[in-house]
Amino acid sequence: MTGVEAVSEPGPAKRPDVTMLAENRTEMGFGRTLLALERTLMAWIRTDLSLISFGFTMFKFLDTMQHTSGSTVRENAPRNIGGALILIGVGTLIMAMFQFKVAMKRILVYTQTKPQTSISMIAGFAILLVALAMLLNMWGIAKF
Image 1 (cartoon, one colour):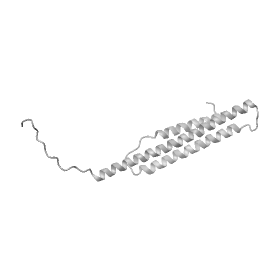
Image 2: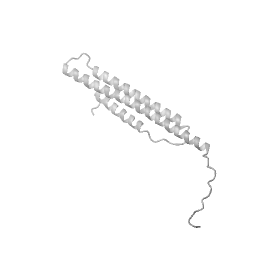
Image 3: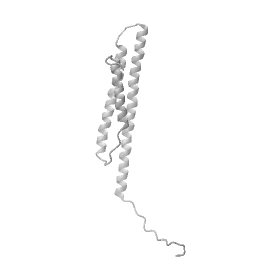
Image 4: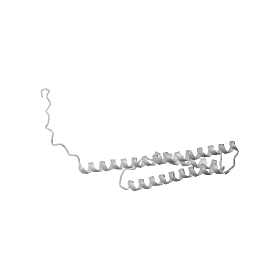
């Protein structure tokens, strides 16, 4: 050869396997669905965290107002109002986490891949523990 390489004619373009394309698209669809479930759980966590923190804020505000003004219209009113808001937040967070687990089980039946551990679920459990500590502190059962 004189420095010129022999170039072979390209063969017909290899078509991708239709079954493989469908499986890849389906797996990507499952990935998007799992991310949508995560986003929904994070939205619930955000809402419930607001309820829990507002309940604790109301408790502290009303308790301080009651002690500074000296009025005792209802002695346990700050604790009851704050506790109710915290319990609503905890209850809806537990329901959201349960809903997430049920939806994950329903979806994972159709896929071969195992999803990562949900950071949202871990955050949800951590918030539940903090809310429980708040309730125990408000009710005078334990001091944190």
